[in-house]
Image (cartoon, rainbow, N blue to C red; front, side):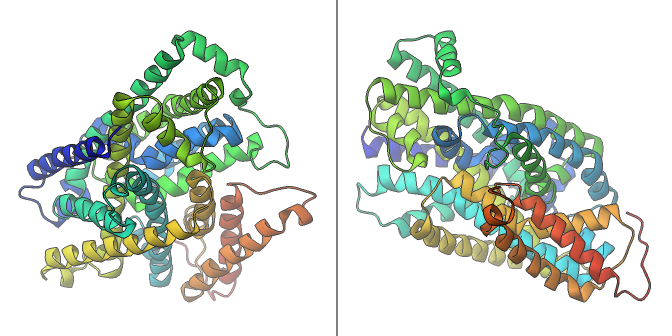
Length: 489
């Protein structure tokens, strides 16, 4: 298909998003930007969060990941259910009872300013890196199939993409994103299902026949019983649970949408519906991945070395113009869905956690103008990280994303777990030191695990190790507290 066609799809979809943004961002203020005036319909939030949670990483990387890991990723997805239950029953009631805008304000109330700033810093670091990974994946595809044709450099493509997102979110924030994410989730899922049926048509098989082919193939393996493997089913399940807790429940991006619901009950309904939607949707993505590999084998197609390029390569160069356009609509939708909310959440965290927007002396100042400036610099930082990541990327983004999350979200897991499950105080000034040491120790353990643990290889569960080390470190520094502080959660 011609790059001009793809460019028209990109511009047309972007125009549609801008129309929605214009309608939803009228008469907005900081309360609208941060929490949508706490009036977001819960079902709309749940549906939109599905697209944000999936993002461009799931859309491209998960189908390509099937060749290396089969369907073992489903054990991670099953673990999500327990993670979402923990968020629904423990974290959401806490956030609503304290009436939080930034969830890291809890750490200030529980421990003090150093803990608060440390938690906020790790969120900024985690989400900056994660958002950059997700956006890079999509921008790289746009670069290869559109902008390289016109001689446009990668840095300019990245600038254009971020500029568009910044412009349509800078005013409405969460109030806009709740509606745009609903639109984008619809396009992404429609693209996924249509692509599967286009592939089936090319192979001249029906859906039941393809299901049987996938079932009979080597790709259908879900349970890996080799305890040394990084896809061992028990650690995949536990990893999925804790990944959900930290990347959703302890993540300002995802929780900000929940806190925009009218009530705790609505937010809990939102999380429950989202958790059960996740299983079939992720299974369909894996089914697509297996279908693509079977298709390539049947027609002797040489696949790209990078697994993340398998889906784009086949959709654009082998399935025809319609399939290519459908793929790009889904890709652009998934990209916007994760990028807009990430920039909004990062802006919120900087404004509330570091600039004190909710403090009385700040409320009287022109904070809207400051928020615009913060929004711009957040986008600028992500621009730098995307360009940097392009130079070092050499593996599936889904794997790299969870690996990085294990190191950056681990201290957050330890901090919140210590706050929720103990009533002890601690030496607040020592918290940054503990949260710096724990990822370093986790990395050393991970790098030497095969030697230390008789061939055992850590996968995503390094997150649990990191959180545990942080928890132990916090307990140790609590021993230096002259008087234990009892704070009711």
